[in-house]
Length: 193
Image 1 (tube, rainbow, N blue to C red):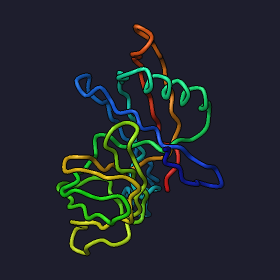
Image 2 (image 1 turned 180 degrees about the vertical axis):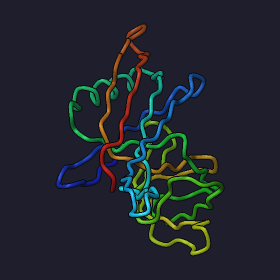
Image 3 (image 1 turned 30 degrees about the vertical axis):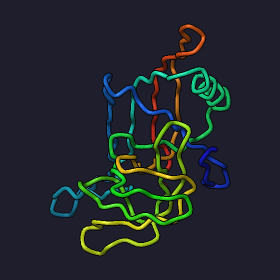
């Protein structure tokens, strides 16, 4: 099952392959600001985007033949097509078990990019994810968000991630023993919701 959404008339697919955490995730931000000089020669900076654009680099190691094939298929289907990309470093834990077809409440534990009214995937295993839309949020510092119904069952400790839209490059894809592949992933956010 794949998670897709439409962005500017284009159907986007979620890239569900998590980093090999032992290798780390390199995250950088691009701030787009407009700098103007006032009549008194003071500098004024105005943000041009609601939040900085993110770039992520990491290495992944697939686990089995099925996942290696799925990664290859994803690589072949992408060229300059935008993708939905989880901001892996900005996750929140699911705090109580969730059954398919039910709503879920997530408590925010730190400042992150969970912005009300954006789509996000739930992620458990590489092939078990679903899309959820924020439908209600508390007004005090957005400390909890209620998400719409999910397609799969999730357990305590599963993760929810905000998404970014951008371009993905799978730089290398190496097969070992016909099953396990390693890949270097580069993602650059290009489009904001």
